[in-house]
Length: 266
Image 1 (spheres, one colour):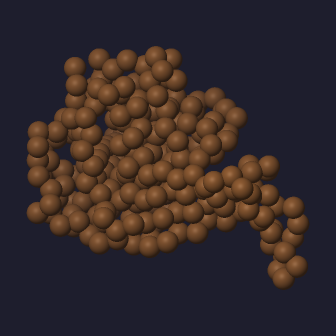
Image 2 (cartoon, one colour):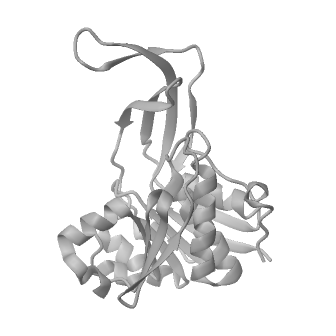
């Protein structure tokens, strides 16, 4: 069986430049990065990375359409290759034009996936209207504070930092807007807030190479297993597995069905 998914959200170019930090800059107490001869690497990130991960995890069983910005957002990370640590990240063209709803049409999708990095493409007004426009089950991963518009979405995914920010702004009132909130907890797994109760989905820590884009992979795994089993429990457990696999890779990466013990969608 094959599925059809629409991913909507901001995309960027993720660029990685490598070098060695051997001394402190004499002009200021900051590391001095000497660039190596290794060519920089780059790939598509954010919503485009969600799309790529869905395609690889599903082994081609999910057809993914992407609605994204035409403005070019670039994230350049300068990496100390010996220490495997980020020295600095420089973001260029960090904002993009907002999506016009006349650009969006319902084409009989099995699932709508919104990857909202809060860079300008998706205003709260647009987000509120998307679920009704598409008329199918939906997930949203958002960097915005959870407000009444989130009640339009079936499943909301945020990370622990975004959750803390929402709690500071709204207190426990956020549960009035969202009946299914999935909060990722880094190497501790994820929590699901449903009907004002919290259920933990713990996972075992793994050696971490790079966490860049791990949230995209988690979302992709969540989508694939939900399509396959229609079980949110199974989907969160599988998403944890996907995230554990991808953080062991360098840069913004993807995982394949083969790397996930030969994962097979029903």
